[in-house]
Amino acid sequence: MDKVSFVIPCYRSELTLTHVVEEIRTAMAGLTNYVYEVILVNDCSPDNTLQVIRGLCEKYNNMTGISLARNFGQHAALMAGFRHVTGDIVICLDDDGQTPAADVGKFLAGIASGQDVVYARYLNKQHTAFRNFGSKVNEIMTRFMLGKPKELYISSYFAAKRFVIDEVVRYENSYPYVIGLVLRTTKNISNVDVKHRQRETGHSGYTMKTLLGLWFNGFTAFSIQPLRFATMVGSLCAVSGFLYGIYTVIKRLVNPGVPMGFSSLMSAVVFLGGMIMLMLGLIGEYVGRIYISLNNSPQYVIREIIGQKENGNEM
Image 1 (tube, rainbow, N blue to C red):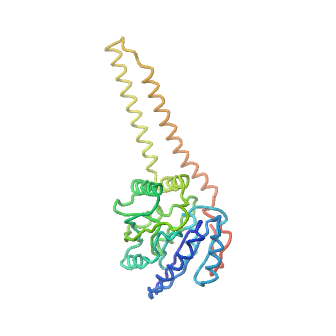
Image 2 (image 1 turned 30 degrees about the vertical axis):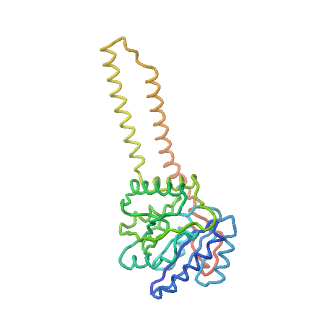
């Protein structure tokens, strides 16, 4: 009998988390071939989420709560949960109820059919326009920077075999990005269609700052494509400047009376200067992340473990 481990990052979910857990229990009651555990990771939520987790862990003996010392972000919270799973299959879903736990059977069927990872594909996303824009940018980034197949839909609701998760947690540096870690582990990935629900209460914890941080994690930690792009742009600018210089010399020789053009010169200087600063900033982002990683900055720090797991690794 296979064991399923549910990992749920929790932030501002005091009003929704109990419903999500109850839905998991109802869904798994109909799947008699599986046993399960639920790992709830409190990402230093400022509301009463931790108290709700305590209550659930006291009520059910297959619940484990992990409380982080500060807010490290969704992907760090996932890594904390991954290092405490004991199941053969790991399923990750959100704490707000928008990802239906009732559809867990679809994911388990996909894994049973031979897939290593199964992602939810939403046919009717109920996010705000801002979140949908962020998802679209993330889709483009993962496709071009991380080599994601165009037809594959990536979401926060997914199931993975244990060997995939074991490979993911081998990553011990700062700035974890679970999508990149999964994509570099296996290409045997598929989608299942699920219905995305309306948010019942509250609002998304993702801001423009957190989305930008997530995108930077993706393409600086797992891809050198931005550096190659910088090299390409620099080469194009150099060639363009060389050709424009030849054009200017020829124009001057053919018609000595033609003014050289101060405005065009300043435009070229400002453009090239801006590109140089942009590329230096990009290189600096890579160097900065290398420096932080060399300083052993933690992915997360666990303040407390609640429930059945009394001993666990801190990273």
